[in-house]
Length: 407
Image (cartoon, rainbow, N blue to C red; front, side, top):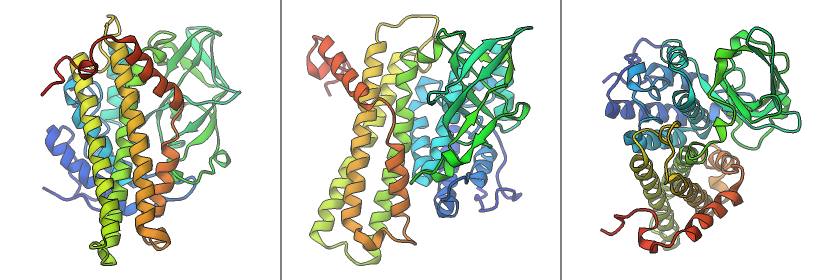
């Protein structure tokens, strides 16, 4: 196998698109290793992992979320490869959380298109991802001046307002920019960024971590779109279980960041010859247990998605009586992995002390990135949802999530 080099333009890079899934995961691990080695170099406000996404494109990871009929592997759509998707996202997070965050948004966007879009839209956007190496994303956060969508003449639509936390600003080519349609439910739409004029505000993004995501505020006022840019029907974005079940993706990226901290902590203790200290051993043991429990949560989530329907979230045209269970389980995964990551960060800091938080060690940067990334919205509502589902059930606890829970 030809190794990935540090130069993404090198002719040594393997450019075959349709790798078997097991080989793609091997290549993804190599990309993640490059990401880890280059992370410190791009840890600055306004930076973007350009080389990293050239590698991601060249090994076929941009097209991997497409269904096989569109030239991909169905990662994020085919339920029976959910575990492989989560392991892939974890690898990206272990390499660089900024890369993992943007790539997870790409997977999310292609999942939405293939779930709610028309066959013609799927073909068009598949070409963009597969052949033109366009990066997709979901820019949904906003402040008081959020985006609204207005019908114009000739089946065109105009946008007005801004989005915040637009990860990959200037580099993501096909973001979802959703908003209420004529003061009604939110309408999904994909904006072809090279064809429109927008105003980005880099000064808005002054974070302590995740600097290389370039998550600027972007004003879309004046942008006009054809009707073909609208995905699904008004309200589809907030439909369950698709909206909440997707949290398992970013949880996988976050767990990858925690694994990177564990690896860095072990290396630090080996370098200082402190591996025989019983207190260090106790902390590392607790970290190892926490991380393995995170992996078990991801595998449990994959099993739930697989048991629910052949495609992620099921067919939007059909109702499913187990949607509440899938949403609640996903919220458990998100909540558990957040706590795991917080515990790992604290144990890591106690293990390495002040010295380990200084360059050239990567620990302080990873902690900054992970701390910011963990601050996902509606944490309390997610936890309450778990309790609401559990309280609504009367079956025994051992079978609450699966009728075949007993070994």
